[in-house]
Length: 233
Image (tube, rainbow, N blue to C red; front, side, top):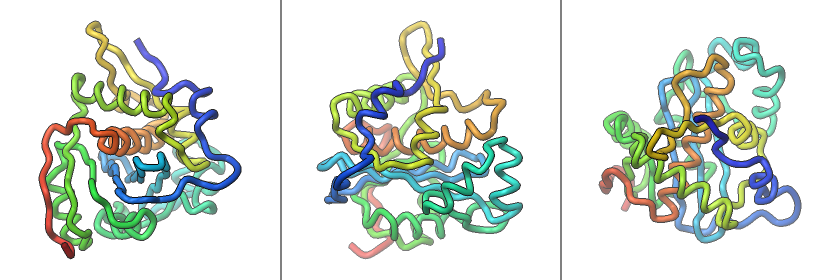
């Protein structure tokens, strides 16, 4: 069975559209998703205030206009770029250390960096190259049982008002496009493998980063946790 990650009405209710945005008060939690698609995505979550925002990057070649044509999204990517939600980093592949440095400038020093456990080596190397200050690295699992737990934590936090996303074309598209599948045991998994629409896959990558960040920030148990000390203590 296939459902939306989050009901549209819930997102509309919690999204910060007018007024003062929740402050970026420490601790800061990053969720980073470099799933293998052209896009690399990051979400910043501040559990003390609920603030949630996202940043994503494409490589500079062939260019945002060409990516937009490929994905059939009209001017969406250009609109995201104008708003500073989508950047280009690297030539034909996003240079992950440079992207992490951009995330650091945008979100500030992390207390936790949540990533997919299957790409731990890539992130450790990239974190070292980027000079990210010491933090906990939460290795999140996307298997049906543990991944389902993260989805549940994200959904509950949103429904309880513990997530206050800043208004964003990037995040709105992610919540609109992301679907979850449910197995016979009730375990949920974000659908990432069978999108015929690459544009939906791209924004789904952003949703995965947001789910990891919120789950880590709300105290969800990672598959493994380690401390890295590459940057200043």
